[in-house]
Length: 455
Ligand SMILES: [Zn+2]
Image (cartoon, rainbow, N blue to C red; front, side, top):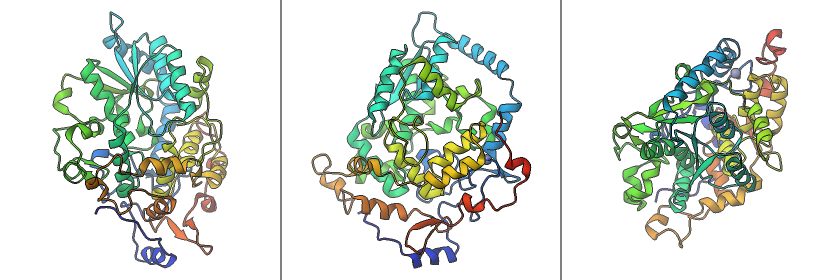
């Protein structure tokens, strides 16, 4: 059996692990918050998902003189880059690929949220491209996300909705939760790999993602080019021993979980040999100044774009990543593993863009960052609970409890809390050892205290 129920961690166990200097995921033991935004040095860089194991040590965001790389990058974006030149470069790139007969000449992956709406819209109407938008279906779609997908096509886009085999996707999601506390991994495989796969099949040479992940603090070298590093979606051959999904090798998944080549093919990187003909996977944010809040207003102005009817649990907005209920669990579990949740991520971006002050950001983090995603907890548990109707005994035997409840999930989640980030307090609740709101006492220059972003 691979997966069994975890027992509740006690205050004594947590304290003992802390005293022994234990940290999970190779995270830096000292927690430091950026002096400009609200991100800490625990933030992991984007991982190559098919190499992600339980034992993988995370590379984390770089800090320089107390300021995170994402803030350094944002400053450059606002002050140094000549956006007019970049836009001309985009036009030249489009000129190379634009079709003469009206057939699709670029792919824009997305859900019809504000960012993919904006990307496809300007490519079509300003740069005169013929985009095919593609959607890797959300795991737990919301009503308003569905409505926005329809509005996307109403605004003039062709859309291909790709729904993967849900039986396999649920099983892989359950495994990635058990092993990595990573409920969004199966989605991320599709998000990164479906577009290059379809592009190579359809003979379309150009793919546009929106924002470069490096703007959130990956290796700044990735920002020198408009292209996504190809290791995120491709590999030199498919070695089943060394490609991992949910932290288990493809060999193990085939042998012990009865999955066949076809079941897993959508989750495997594309073989580099197959894309040697040249597919460019580009970030539009390299060419146009990316501002998520403006993209929202743009989508509202140009279409019937709707927000979620309520504030999203874990953060303070209604219009970011609203199409999938699984996002709540994605950010909740990131908060557990790294101490920084959904609010920290959004507020940091908005602080860098000058939409929010750091003090406002800190207050929002205090209020919402680790809020429990109670609204959709039952949908989530149902999705990752496995039953006899759909899964054979050989698969179910790998799980002590194929069906799980909230207690099972909470205990499992707690085993992913690194003792250098979390402690159990006197009223027996989890509490951050170093929060940004306590950190305010640290010495910050007046210039930074009054900093109003890059506007
Ligand atoms: Zn920062």
